[in-house]
Length: 404
Image (cartoon, one colour):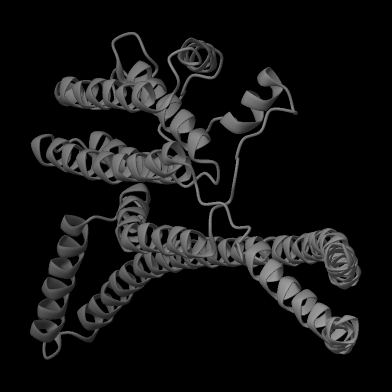
């Protein structure tokens, strides 16, 4: 009986030996699977790009739409002033107003930091309102139509303040409002060129150079869309500004459409006199030729001066557009390079986290498998001895009963 009992024990030990031989392979496969699963759960490819905040995105959209509306309203008001009043000085002032307002409004709206664009636009609108208001430096530029220009400036000043209230935190709004009041008081407009110091630089001087102006440059698609908007805004106003500057150059040189027509009529009259006198007197002919030469030279000189002014204006505008496009392209390339470096840094951090987490999980699993193997060994090795002990004890008790 004992031999029959020991036979299963021997069989079990052989089986256990087979199991112990295959355990390392199972353990290796389990560890490999764990590392794979752990890697899948830990590796998450996140782009380090941070899109613009909702406030910054709204600020960029609202300021640029404000600039478009402001430029269109100033252009229409200035055209109405020029039509209603034939005074050459007022017409030149209307052209200067359109040119200055367009240039300054676009510069303010195209600030890189959206909230600085809001602040710059607000200061421009308030400064223009004070400039055209009664008692301001420009309160007599448009004659009887001064009221329409002042009303337009008041409306857009209120609109700019409304945009600022919508975007700025109520706790921070008094600080911005105080800066606008101080800036427009210390740096008022004195003429229609609207030359003024940098709002961003003065804001940093007051708030401190450690104050961040921009939380994020946005994603690469946002940067590309921003560049496209900038180029579109500049290209839409560039032809109109070239025409306005040409018209202003003509008016400043004293050559208008009426003057040119008058010179051409005089030329026709002198040509007619020359043809009439050609057959009568050579002296009269020479005088007519001299008059014609003088008239032609006068017209040609005026046209040369006007053409030179026009070409200079076009070259300046082309150079400005080229510089703007180059700066925007450089900004996009810089933003893309920064994003690339951030992606590389993020991947390095992710790899380090994967290695660390995989090591921790592997060590934990190894401890658990070791404890499981110890427990299984105790059970498999102790069970046959326990069974043999209890069976032998039962057999001895049976033999004693049989002998009794």
